[in-house]
Every structure is written in structure tokens, then in C-alpha cells.
Amino acid sequence: MVARIAAQSRQPPSGPRPLNLMRDLGAVADLMEVAFKEELDSGARRLIREARTMSRTGPLLLLLSRLSGASVGLHPGFVWEEDGRIVGNVTVVGAHRPAGAWQIANVAVHPDCRGQGIATQLLQTVIEHVRRFDGRSIRLQVRKSSPAIALYQRLGFHSLGAFTRWRTGREIHWDRILTGGRPLRRAVQNDWAAIWELFSSVTPAAQGWPEPRRQNEFRPSFWRAASDLMTGRSVQRWVAPGSDALDGYVELETQPGSSPRLTLRLRADGSDRLAGDLLLVALRQLWFRGGTRAWIEHPDGDGPVEGSLREAGFEPLRTLALMQLQIDRATGK
Image 1 (cartoon, helix red, strand yellow):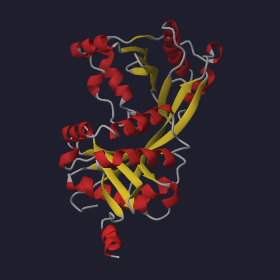
Image 2 (cartoon, one colour; image 1 turned 30 degrees about the vertical axis):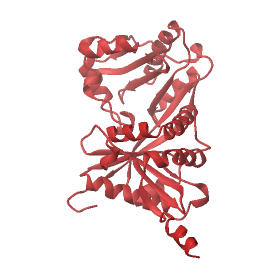
Image 3 (cartoon, rainbow, N blue to C red; image 1 turned 135 degrees about the vertical axis):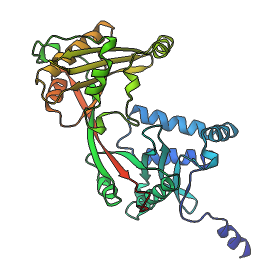
């Protein structure tokens, strides 16, 4: 009897606690696989496999956690433990920009334990954690159709917009892309400020995740050019000049080991056919380089661009809403 009582007393209490990288990473990987089994793509499965591998590295993982700051309170998140079994997890990290911003990378609860308030309490723990570190805001992504949006709204998160990830099919339908014959030209160094003005005019959800792109990414730089040369990264840009500003912009980024990525921006009052002009010039360059598969993330509901993407053979993969909680440090809310 005494032995049984002692064994029971050693059981960890139920509830949220900081994630321990050495002890919990494998269990969190198992939880992610079960919680998101209907949503996992190849990239997510690869990350889960890597997490399981890291969980077996022992002292090396401890060293990495200390180097990352996890050992001094900047841990990557929290878990919910029930009778020694991890059934919930939330991952939160500090962002480099904007100042005071934090990001929630995932909220996972085991299907057998949903509806018990675990996600709510994990998120409330995160909010208190960010407030202790003088955080100003928390952002997260969630599928636009997810019922979890209601939970985030109850906690004070509001929408910053949504974007859709598209991917090309097996072939590009050149003859179906409707164009307006708009004259385009290669971007030159002096275009960088106009490109930035056009890029930053879109909704926050379209400015990049997990962190928004910066002005310096468009400004010519010797060191960036040297880095691109060493890594094999290539960025090609085209613009559609307007009367006093740029009406459109498209970017093709290629890098060894990664699928080519397109970025396309249109001025709100531009021509509907301009999207086709911009898309066609980038896809032709992609084809000249020996590839046809590419992906793009674009603001949801942009009819002209979405129409051109469908004409070219792109398929929508998922639409994510970007939500933000603004933390008022004066009132503690």
C-alpha cells in the first residue's frame, strides 16, 4: 500500500507546464501527428521526423536548448500533461520584428481530450508568459474554416486578413493565361523604393509569415549579392511601370533544394489583365530554367490574381487567416 501511494505521488500533476526539449520533444511529435493527421503535408511530416530524431540526441539537444535560450525561460512553448501523458501543446517564440511581437506556431490537443478547455488554458498561459516578457502582440495562423477561430476571438485575437497558398500542377497552361499586353521590364536597382511601397501597401497577412518582409530586402546590397552567389539563391524581378508609380510587380525566387517561389503584387486600381502579364513573364523564365513546378502565397479574395493562377494551372492548397492579439501592458489585457 505504501509503495502504491508513493508511486502515485510521483505522477506529474495534470495541467500546463513549460516544454522540456530533452524529455518532451518525441511525445510532442507524436501528438502533432495525431492532432493534425488530416492537414499534414510533406514538409510538416519531415519536421515531425526531425523532431523525433532530435529527441534521441540527448546531451546535444540540451546544449542546443541552452544556446537557443530555452534553459533561461525563453522556452519554445508549453505542454498539457494528463497522468504523465502529453495531450496538449502550444509553441510560442519571440519574433525579431516588429518589436515586442511573439508568434504562436501551433496549438495541438489530442482528439480524445478536446472540448475540455485544454487549448484555452494553454493559450492563457502563453498570454501571461508573453506579458511577463513585456510582449506587445501575439500573432498566429489558422485555417480560415477552422472552428478554432471562435476560440481565438474569445481570447481577444482579431483578424489581419487571410492568404492562400497555390501550387502549379504538372504542366503550365500557357495558352489559357489571359493577358492585356502590358509592357513590362526587368527591375533595376533604382526601383527598390517603388517596389517596397507597392509591396507594403497590401494587408499584413500578405506581407510575410512568420515575420513581415523588410525594406532592406528590396534595397540592393553587396553582402546580400555575395550571400546569394554562395548559396545559389536567385531572385528575378519584373515591374509594370505606371504614370507616377509601379502598377505591378512579380518576383521569381529559386534556391537549390527548394521549390521556386513566386510573389506577385498589383495596385488596387490596376488592370485585371495585368496579373496575367506578370505571371506569364515569370513562368516563362521558370520554364527556361528547366522547371514548371512552383508555389505562391497571395492575399485571399484577390479575384484578378486568383483567376490568372487558375488559368495557368495553379491549384489552391489551403487558406490561412492571420490573427493578432494586442497586449495592453498598461491595463494588463
